[in-house]
Length: 324
Image (tube, rainbow, N blue to C red; front, side, top):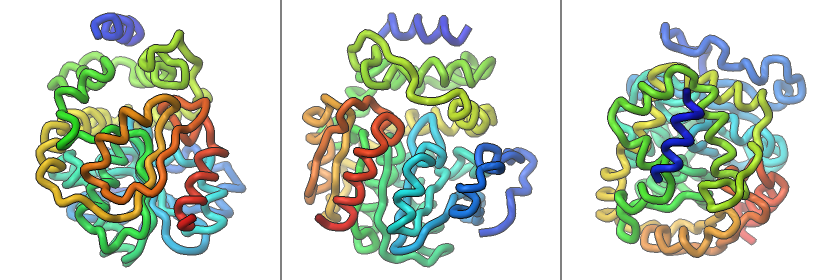
């Protein structure tokens, strides 16, 4: 059923594991038997304003915070985290209300989510000078963090996210792809997707991969293995997480208002986009990040930058984060 819906819509346009009864008991399902991972990284939890946030920590050096997009979790960074952890202490977060974070934030607008992330990073972890990377809607949160707490961000990398704000209305944003308009609808996405979340996600991933139909291409294969899809689907099967993911889109109007009213950040910023989309994305970021020191397209990559070209993404992150 879900595949049919997708086709139709395309045609139309620091503690123990959570104790909450809703918590995903298998928060470490994808890494429990991964000896190399477990030698380097640990799963951690912290309570922040009624929300229990899950994050994965490992490495040595200055702190590097990674924020995921939709429909993903901290796990989107899994393949590049070991390399990053050679130079940085990596904190890969599950956004409030998503992944294996539990509880509901007071809002899913990106300014509110940035405040939760800040409470974790600055208050719980006591980090006051971070390097920050955000992808997709997580980049919406990352940008707000850099705007709201500029003195606490050393460098910010903004990955593949046009920004609703002074140069891009939320209404225009929703015309970029069928799913952006679909996900803003009240209750209907949950009604249609809940029958088989995994099928929906597995059908979606190739649409915005390199050569995918949402980029005007002939179609693409998913860059994710069945095991990766299983891990993302495991969290989005939780009703609150499924709804939380759609709320990221339902709050785009508020994001537009917040960003239009915001004072731009001067934090040194890198913009990284899918191949062929830099010229469309950069004008939406420039009014809000006035110090873009590097802007690159990822060759051979659609939207899933860390998975489609991990070597290039890792190399560019090192180059930028080290200040070169």
